[in-house]
Image (cartoon, rainbow, N blue to C red; front, side):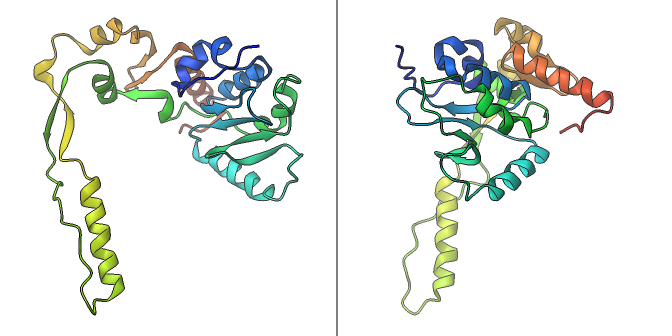
Length: 237
């Protein structure tokens, strides 16, 4: 039996190779989550004692649904399906031992409560993202907000709140990058469409919204959602 041990992979790559990355018992359940344009982050393999699916970004409507149900089922017995925190994320949990049965019917009632949503930011790139991730058409410029500070020392008699404020400013300065990555037109030798075509992404580019989707499934899901909204069956998010 395959172990399905993999390091973190982009969800779009898993979508295109579900037989490679996902245990057979969870595949229909994952496909159902994806059919609502909800990305997933992780799911169990055969090393786990239960079956679960971590989910990605949710629309405001689906976020409200998630937290309402999660709060309502916080005290649900551990042997019952539930929506809530799963490991380090949020998702669906069903008390099924991996490898013993197909999990679709157990996961389905949990997934059913969520609305069809538009593909969220974890499923597409902006044009700027694309240039950063797929080309060398970018440069680094000094960050005008970069002002490194020395780690503050506690002053005898100082109000603890004042020291806390100074320390927060120091932490923020440490975390602020000294340089910013920006798209550099001088490095471009062809049009955006030509770059997209080189990367096999041109067919997944929504010119109207300037969004570039990572694969056909995500692009088609986005366009399906837009059509649904145009017919008055949903809200554009």
